[in-house]
Image 1 (cartoon, rainbow, N blue to C red):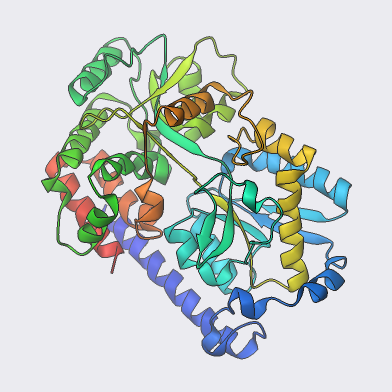
Image 2 (cartoon, rainbow, N blue to C red):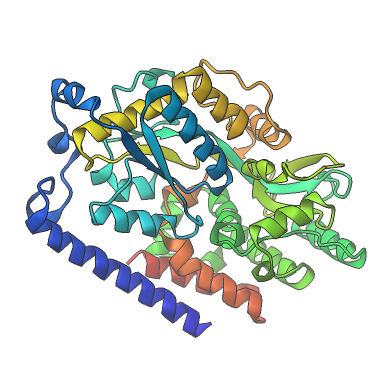
Length: 435
């Protein structure tokens, strides 16, 4: 595992060097850059509305790059319909999801960025603020539900996809959530299912599905997640000192000892085994329901809290937002904004958002009818006020999951690392990532 960590660090170093070299190159050859090769601010790169209007008709293609693998097929179908309706081609770039942010950073720094892209609002969007166009004049800005738009320096820069929630997605015929309310009951459930020849609970090998999402819960449960995370990064506190993390680590040991290793399970296997009754529960969110489309489900499913430290809530937030590349040509910026206008206000665009993507609506004027079972669970927990936040998106250092946390998780699942050692290594990862 030392080798894997070394490779991760090397990749990170090479990435930084690539970005620095590119930035230097841009200093001399980019008309859009400021002195020193930094990307121009939104205001500096924007032309007047009259200029935009004059150039808009010349754009016949935009590029969309986003991280949500579950909607990639539907997005490509949408692209074809958008071109038929508007005459503007939409090229959709694919990604595996795990290295999306690194790919985006490199493309943006090379002046090869997409027109429209996604980011997690918070640390990711703040890091890439120089590349975010001002969308404050988008027509449906006032219709976005309160607190969901990504606003930086008083400007609306990010349009939310949806609200999403995650927790323990369970088969109602196999698990009674009123029984599995603490880590002892959770461990008993795992052992019981193992004895029955079933996998009681499943993580999968993708970075957020293995460690990112599940580690979010103890962060969200501490009294002040922002202050705690800042103190953790500064080396002033450790996870070992907080019961929320102690119980989290014990649960992770139970998972390692009593379930199939997540390193042997990818997203397709995880969801397929759940859909076919081989796995009783998975740690996932409502976005996963689309993965069951090819299965003839013969059971009902629900979502329950990760049972640590008395938690009775699921994690709900805006997972991703759409952004328009402020460093693109003015007419391309306008075309990107026009794409978002169509997506959120046209009948066909709204159909894709709700029916094809399965998104919970974020516009106040659109109701929540016909939600799938897991999205309905998220809406129910939200209505009952039983939600916790996503510190992973807001307060964690950008990129920490892929570069720093995954190596720790991989070592944990392949050794006899203790719960205490796991928390020590995760604490060290936050300190290192925050430097």
